[in-house]
Image 1 (tube, rainbow, N blue to C red):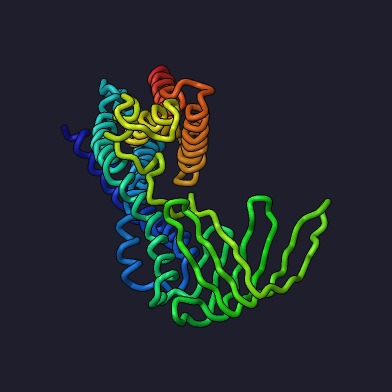
Image 2 (image 1 turned 90 degrees about the vertical axis):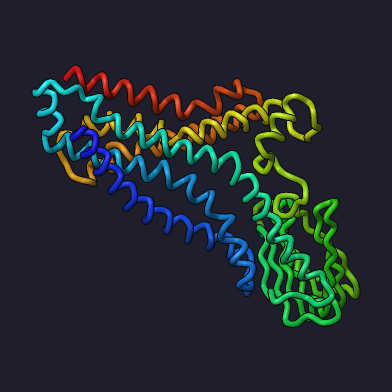
Length: 359
């Protein structure tokens, strides 16, 4: 129990420090990436946005922080020769890993709750927050927003009068990559929620159209008394739910064909397995980090970072993303695609542990 409490306290202390630092950095980066789309937003918008970012932040930082904590703790024990001392006294090294695995199991339970209940609703709410801003731009009273970025598209205007944007500058990129810069005396917006389109009705518009022909930019300037343009918002504003927005019950109902969805059976099965695999990521990280940290004989935190943490990240996330993509496309079994990353980490951890015990 002394060894158990000591290892658990060291891992927990490092975990809390890493969790606080990583969560702050990732939360700030996610907030800035979303605020880059909308400028001049209100405090109310921020207060609604922040809670819907936290589930994604925690789902990243919980396993990552545990990976750092386990690697640093076990790596220090190995470099200080304490693991060899334990073996010399007949203590099985699996006892050192037990606190790490138990903490990983507890964090996996938390990640399961986040990925199954919090994240689907947070994704849906976050996408439709920008729909509220668009509704403000199309309302009679207008909006406090004067600059709006939506993907590659950009809208800026000087004033809002009688439901119209005055002296509006609009930058649009079509699916072929052609760019259109429009300066209009007056612009009215209509939000077609059913088709997820933003329609512009422009008056007195000067248009600069740029297209790439055989590697050269060709520019054309035109004038229009009245002009109509539209932007596809299906990825950014959608009253319907995308696959990550569906609750676990909705996915299971779709697999049983109790409800109709626009997604294939392979995509839904892959998403179902992906949520389970992501939930168990902390346990997989602990299972890989502990034995790999035992192999560290010398070196400080830089060696730990280079030898364990970076390789685990470099293996896990590409395998997770690639496996899920292949599973959704039906090129491999959905379960295999979703669980591939966790399985590789588990096998690597078990192989590293057996190799260290034989040393």
